[in-house]
Image (tube, rainbow, N blue to C red; front, side, top):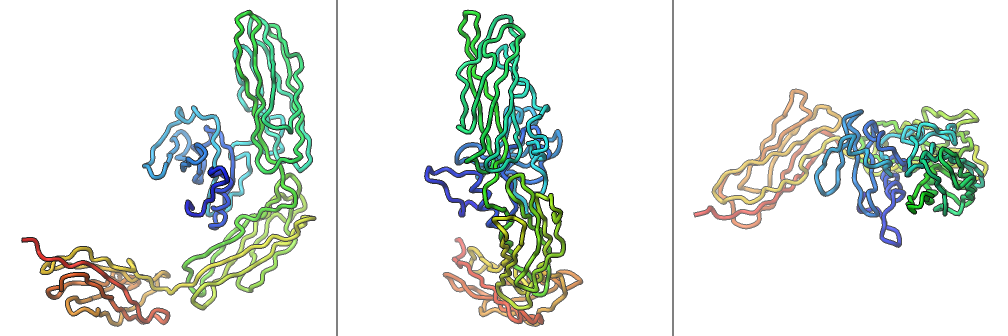
Length: 441
């Protein structure tokens, strides 16, 4: 994955770029902002962006069991709940070999149904002023959607306090402060109107300002309000993954995979038809056919051809999307013989001319079926080869290379030749190499 990631013009790597590369590699991914308290129960690995080019992998160990942090190339460490509490949020990319079909609320943010009335966020205290709901989740909105929110606050101090210089990190907000100067126990409001025009994808913005005490001490404190949600991108459906890669498949075998088709935003989406260009690629189940669905899951049955080499299938998912009627899926893979050799190349290392040695390799059946090695030999007069089954099923054989006489000094190279009764692997060649030196005096 590191080799495929491309930094932007500033030399930075974003989580969106990590997600793009993960999807190209056939993984399912979801970019999210997760509460620190929820990390322990996350069931998939999370890539955490600590700084602009510093990433780590987070693994939840279960409720009250902490989180393991893996920081390549350093070793892993575990942090407990108290240490997690130092961070309010974690920006992460969730990556899995299986579809991530959980609702966004499961990864730390309420769904759009809970939109603007989220009450489970703790109040935030700035000096003597308390903001009762300092975080606004507006959910999923369309391209030109407009939303409003009122942030309430109260002065719990003995003297007056003023809210001044309220600003936003986004021009999409219009902000109005009502009752900006508060006496003791008085309440005020900050009304925020949002226009989603121009917003794309996940939205994480801030509104900030200053609280000035009126007791003559000129004390000033910064307050911050958070805004989170997702804005749909026009004319776009997301198919996850867009490409399925199946390496080292056996001929005639079959595998099932699930793909997810999702329309970004709040508007419904459903699949009208699945069209495959190959009889070896078929949809066994499609969920999300009802008119109010927002995500469609397609379970595919992929049959592997009976010829060696690479293969590629293509299918089209036809949707009710008025401007994006189709989503294209590609399936690529390779067919390999049933027998494999491990290790495929034998490095003998440094050998002494007169000292004996022994090296072993295994010939295995990927499918677990029995087979036989009919003969073994090597092209060296100084070495011999023997073979024997490892188990009663005879699905794994051990090939042993031993020394039979003095070896010539210098580089020793050759190959082990194994003949089998398997039709696709009648002859296997296993290279070996080493360096022969004199005995130490």
